[in-house]
Structures are given as structure tokens and as C-alpha cells.
Length: 459
Image (tube, rainbow, N blue to C red):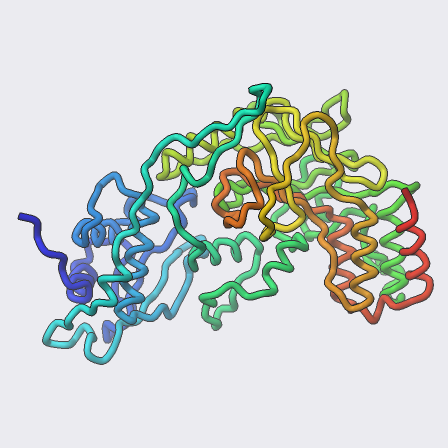
């Protein structure tokens, strides 16, 4: 006969007291707060010991399959803590050295020193019900009429769920937005984050792929070709509009758009690589682990950027499907510049979809063309966006997002996609940051307006 589900609070107290779960223990003499290891499954230092407490509760609460999904165990454990009014007081889950969360015991009736065990509420029964996984079947593979392309259907890959606080915190980490040491992590995603994501907010520790630009990359700014006017002491006291015009002139040379590209690769919402492409012609996304990073294709003049080998995760289905998408890239996907236009062209079998915003809420997926190069971004679009910003609107986007192997945007979180690539145009990123830091009013000069109008008329 199966044993009944234990009461969570006395069960948890006994597990903390036992000292048998690494990283789980009291953090204060009064035993009112305790720590729990809280690592993302894709961290290189993650191990099976990090999930022991989640697995233990899953085994006694009705979800005890040893081959279950650890992310589901963690989600159920967190839901039970919330249902029983535990309060998270410290969130160090993103730290490298000791990623933990610290929770405060509910009080007063359910304090660990209470003699009589509390009565479990119906709320816990509802919120801690294990999340059931869908049947783990292979995704449907949709082929074009020429039987050359592959599209993975997401609904048959992942759990049916919406964004939770863990997904949002991972997103914040990817965007390099961290709460202060004394501030609590917000339960809901702040509205400005979307704007920052669409703007291609800077991330640290760039890895230049070609010679030149190392110093600029380390500081998170463009290289000398598009550096700020006052970078070397010259023009430090120039008005913002004049500095903006100077930088803009270095971005638009001989009726051509000049920039470098900061390329970040995400596997299921986790950043696995970030590189700076120092090639104004652009780059080609390929999958060739043996290739030396930064080689240039002689025919197209594009830098060949190989996607990284996927790390091994607990989800064997995700591992297999990600590898399937990468293997289907074939000759790859181009992102190049021609005059004022940033174009893309798909050569391989894996379909690709694009947007100018990571959090695009559109219904219609936008597919990268295979028959011929397709314009995805025009320099005039950015110039027009700056004009709108001066008039009181929002700053324009300075990046592209490409999803490989799955339809997107499709009203589903980008973090759930197998392979996502973020492309930031570094020269436009600098111009955008200059405009935002100076404010719209600082750009209201006749000379700048005339310059912007002339650029809008080109091409």
C-alpha cells in the first residue's frame, strides 16, 4: 500500500535537520531561515546533488519517477513553498561561487519550534500538484515542397506552461540586468526590460572574432571607426547634437552602412556564446565545431561564425532536437550588409525566422528567404526612428533576432526556443545610447535634422 503524502512543513524541517542534503541548512541560530541550492540546469558546475531536495519532495508527494524532469521537481517545490507562505529573503541563484536561495520560515503557527504540527491547507494541495509532462514524442517535421527544409513543432517538445519567475530571472541575467545587493528580486518583469532587450543592451566579456577591436570590445563599445567623439579627449565639450552628428557620419560612409556585429547565441534561453564580428560585410551562421572561429568565406566575403556544440542537459529530448537543428544548418544563414541594407539569406535546410525585438508579440512568423537575399533592416529605418525619438517617441531598435528550426514569433516565450541568435549592430547601439543618455531635447538642432532628412532620402 502506498504511503500517504507527508505534511510539507514537518517533512522539510526534518530534512534540514538531517544535514543529508548538500547546501540545505539553517542560516541563523534561531532556525528561522534556511538555504537551498538553486543552480540553473545548464550551468557547467551543476550536478545531481543540487537537486536532491527537489527530488526527495517529488518522491514523497506523488511525482516520484526517478527519470522525471528536475525542472518540474524544482517548480513543484517552489510552488509548495509559496503555498505554505515561506518568504524568499535572499536570491543568490546567479552567483558563480555559491548559487543559493534563502527562505524564511512561515510564522507564527508554523514556526519550526511549534510543538504541534500544522494542518496542511487545501491551497498547498492545489499549488503543489505535480506538473504533468506531455507525451515525449518526436516533433512533427514539416517539409517544403522540395523536401529540403525542416521545421520543429514546439508544442510537441516542451511542457505546456507559461513564463514563471525563474524564466524571467534567467532573462534578466541574459540582459545583464541585476538587482542591487539590498533590493529584492521582482516577481514580475519590469516594463523597461522589453525596451532594453529590443535595444540590444550591452553585455560584458565580449570575445572579438577577428583582429582589432579588442580594447573597444572589452569596454562594450564600438571600435575606433564608430567611437565617441570625446573618446580620446577631443571634442569632450561638444554639444550632444554635434557629437551625435560626428558619430553618425562615421556610421554612414559613401552611402553605405558601417558597423560591427555582436552575436550572442542562446540554447533554450541560456546564453552559450558571445562574439564580436569585426567584418563590415557581415557573417554567416554555420555549424562546424572543427572550424577555426573567424575564418572568412572567399566567395561571399562573410565571416564564418560557427555555433557552439550544445552542452549536455537533463533533457535528452532537448539535446537531440537542438543537435538536429544545428546539423540541418548546412551551408548556413547569412547576415550581411549591402549599402544601406542588412540582409539575410538561408542556404541550409533548417528554416529560420526573424524579428527586430526579442519579445515580439506578433502572431505571424517571419521567415528568412532561401531563394534570394532578403532585406531585414534598413539604415533609414534607424534614422527615421531617431527622428521620432526627437519628436517624443521611443528610440529605434538596433538589433535582429533569428530563431533557427522553429516558427517565431508565435506568442510563445523566446526562452523556450531551441536556438536563438541575437545580432546587435554596435555602431547603432552606440548612437542609441548617446541619444538616450543625452535626451531627445539635446538632439533638437537644425543641422542634425537636415542631416537626418538627407539620409532618409538616400536609396
